[in-house]
Each structure stands twice: as C-alpha cells, then as structure tokens.
Image 1 (tube, rainbow, N blue to C red):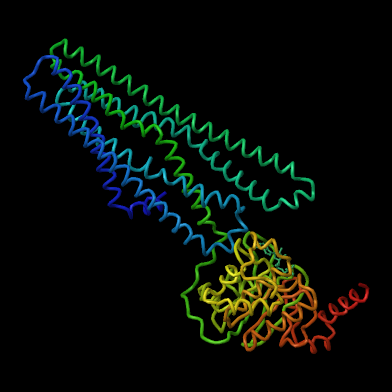
Image 2 (cartoon, rainbow, N blue to C red):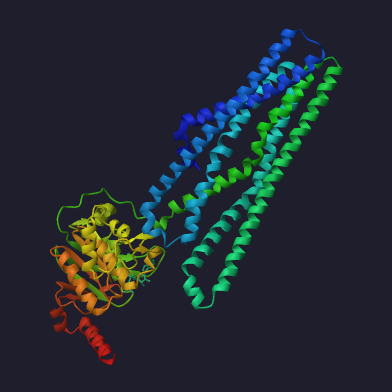
Length: 571
Ligand SMILES: Nc1ncnc2c1ncn2[C@@H]1O[C@H](COP(=O)(O)OP(=O)(O)OP(=O)(O)O)[C@@H](O)[C@H]1O
C-alpha cells in the first residue's frame, strides 16, 4: 500500500484541489441548508425586507458554490485517479517486465491476467473512496461543529457523537467483518479467470478427450461462486450504508428534540432551531461515503497485496546483477565455466559443471536426449537465468554483469515456442525489424520456402492457421530480417520435412556466416559441417568434437548415430 500511496502522491496538485473543492462543496451544502432553515424560520416572524433579500442572495451564492465545487471535486479527483491508475499500470509493467520470462512458470496465466487487469482496476477506488473522503469529512465536520457550537454547545456535542458513530465506529465494525470476505472475492475472480483461459487454450484437447462438459461445469461452478461472492459483498456494502444513514437520521431527530428542549428552556433562540436541524441533516451526507470506506479500503489493500505478491516473488527474481558492463563489439565467444544450474523451487540439478568454449564465428550443435538440459543452456546464454555455480560468459563477460537487453540486442533467438500475434504476416515480421521493407520481407519468406504466403495474409491468434512447420519457418524468416552476431536456434526445424529442412538450414547458415551459431537439435543429420558437436547427457557434457572426431571415437554420439540408422532402416 505504501508503494501505491507513493505513486498517488505524485499528483499533489490534483489531490490538493480535490480536497479543497470537496471541502467547499461540503461546506456549501451545509451553508445552503442552514441558510434555508434560517430563512424559513425568519420569514415566519416577518423580518425587515433587507434581511430576506440578503438571505435569499446568500441562498443563491451557496447553491452556486456547492454545484461548482462539487463539479471541481469530481473533475480533479477523477483526474487524479486516472493519472494514478496509469502510473500504477506502467510502474507495475516496468517491474514485471524483467520477471516475465520466469514468472509464467509460477502464476497461472488467467490468475496473472486477473491481477494485471482486475486488481489494478480495483485500485481506482483507493483515491476516490479511501484516501480523500475521510479528509473531506473531517474538515467539513470540524468547521460545522465550530459553527454549531456558536449557537448551541449541546447540539455541537450531539454532532460530535454522531460523527464518531457514522464516520468511525460503523466503518470500523464493517471493516473487521469485510476483511476475510474481500479476499474470497479476489480469489474467486482469479479462479474464474484461470478456468476461462484453460478452457479456451485447451478447448481442442478437452473436446478430443470428451472432457469438455466436465470443464464447462467447473467453469460455471467457479463463475457462480464468484457471482455469489460479489452479491454478498454488495449486500454488506448496502447494509453498511443503510446503518450509516439510519444513524444519521436518528442524530438529526436527537438534534431536533434537544434543540426544541433548549428553546423551550430559553437556552437557545427558536429561530435557529430549523437551521441546526438542517445543518445536521446535511452534514451527515459527508459521512455517507465512509459507509463504503471499509469495503473499498480492504479491496484496495488486497489488490495492492496481490500485485506486490507477483512483483516480490523471490523465485522469479534473478540474483541482483553485479556492476553492469558493456558487451564488446563484434562476434561473441560463448563460454561455460563450471556452470551448474537448478530451476527455482526444484531440487534436481539440470546442468552440472558445464565447461565449454564456443569460439567467435563458429557453428556448434548441441545434441542429446530429451530433458538433458540443451534448452536450459540457451536460457543461461540469454541471461534469463543465472547459473548457481560457475559462470556463463559472452565475449569474456559474465552474464551476471550483463544487462539482459544488451544480450538480446545482439542475438537472433529461435526458441521452441515462438509467439505469433493476431494480425498480418507483415505485422508479425516487423516485430524483429520495424524498418524492414516489403521486398526484404518477401525475400526472407522466399528463402524459408514460404513465398506462397502474402504479406497481407492474416494470422489468427498464435498463428494457429499455419502448420507447425510453417510457423517455425515464419519464425526463422523473422530472424533473417535482423542483423545479429549470435544465433541461438532451439530445434528450429523439428516440424519441417527433410527436404525443406535442408534448404532452410542452408539459408540460415549462409545468413549467419561468420557469426556465432548454436543449434540445439534432436536430429543427428546435417551435422557433418559443424565446427563442434556437444553431446549432452543428463545435464553433463558427455563428449565434444567435430562430426568426424566423434564418429572415430565411437562413443555416445556414435551410438546415437547407430540407433538412428537402425530406426531409419526399420522405418
Ligand atoms: N521452467 C522450468 N522449471 C522447472 N524445470 C524445468 C523448466 N524447464 C525445464 N525444466 C526441466 O529441466 C530439464 C531440462 O530441460 P531442457 O528443456 O533444458 O531439456 P532439453 O534437453 O532441451 O529437452 P528437449 O530436447 O526435450 O527439449 C527437464 O528435466 C525439465 O523438466
């Protein structure tokens, strides 16, 4: 909450004006109704015309003041709110961005979406209904009580008691009750959001496995639960408002009774009685927002806590980077020096003391069984994770001392799951280089055997209207548009047929000539020309060498080739 208040306080001018106009509107209303009460009473005793004229003129002045100040209050408070929301959103994204590659493993995407959209949105109530209404209420009440005390101390005391009950006691009581319930709503919203995303993402598989109805029932159940929680919250908010208003009315009746008694006893002039009752009726309008205060205060507190939970998630956070250094110009050398790595919150070590040097401008293939740690090596080179022991260096500088962005600027990375956005082929290609022209894009498509795709072809979400192999080649075409000194390719052609694969890889090697290239692959063909082949086995390097060296050695790679040859022969 401290962080949110700090962001809010950057809008000092609007906050000051909201409070000022809120105060003027509150006082304008009190003055308007006090004046009306006085005018009615005074008119009954046939006052001089001048008194009536001045009182009527004041009536108009107060009504204008009230209307204009209310407008000013709404204007500045909403402006402060929307500016604050946009500040929170950009602040949240700035803090979330460096965690993004890791955070998706920790939070379900639906829940994350519900936090980013719903919880940030909930914070709009923080200023409008939590932060400044108590300030306005207190200042208006203090001024009104001072004014009332001038006419009658007992009536002022009744008002003080009333403000304590409506502005503090009832809100505090509802706040205690609201605390547990509000967290249920947030949880229910996260669950609905998660169910919906899972339902949409998994629709096809659910249908194929005839689990669609089951999932639909679960979705409806969590939606019903969310609606029930929301309805409960609205009832409680209404109950709080009703209690508040009933007590405010009771106070006005008490003021009337006490005023009548004081007048009868000759301790107060009767002409002020209606005025004080009207003051009481009006001033408690300012306590009404306090009735909703507990639910909004709790909602804001929990929304802020849920956002903090994402940003403070220790397992998504990289260890603090040491003093950052610049990446030297030119084609990079990659080296692993005793690098070991375990994924956060996992016990099994995925990479064990890897020692490897990849010289600048060379081509290296990393092969090995599924789960042997090949993709994890790519993640370490990209600085997405840091090794827990040892070092991974680019051009002699440890990734601990390099800003992620600087590594990515230098790299063309094709990871296993590439994302395509809803839009045209052109829009998706421009992501890698927004200065590329149509001719360059068409050339890149042609080199990837995708000449038949028009730049205006629409891609549906995640590029689902392309085949797996087409998506991979479109990803490669996207990389071809970018100058990069380092190429990291994680199974870039796993879904592409052999003939197309040969052509496509040939184009990639031509493009990446003289650049450092690392190719992670399951397939063992086409590796004859690689400068180095690294064979991974359960997180360790089993052997390294050129194709000829490894075949001659008759070690793990040789055996893998034998198995592959047998499978081909059998197929
Ligand atoms: N984000 C993650 N969190 C926890 N464990 C992970 C994560 N990513 C991978 N792993 C685990 O780390 C091990 C190595 O995974 P990695 O993806 O590096 O293997 P790989 O050799 O590239 O496999 P494949 O050839 O099947 O892609 C696997 O056992 C996997 O379960």
